[in-house]
Image (cartoon, rainbow, N blue to C red):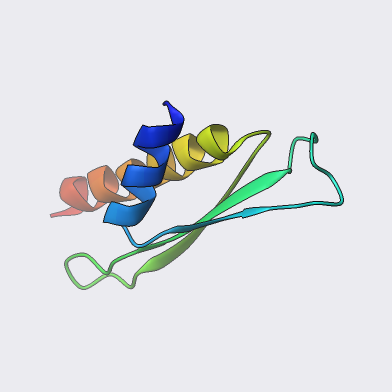
Length: 76
């Protein structure tokens, strides 16, 4: 995922990304926060995804988001 794609996806899902200045290059340097909406009677979820870069954190968040949606489709 490129930076522009990451930023656009975060906008689409009303997500936020934070950078940890005390660990600017570490594995948890960036965190993407996304609220996955409630689906078919199931409560919404809060996704926290960490990464070494904005792109990596957003990509991890998107993977979790897609997994939640696919799991909900299987249930119903």
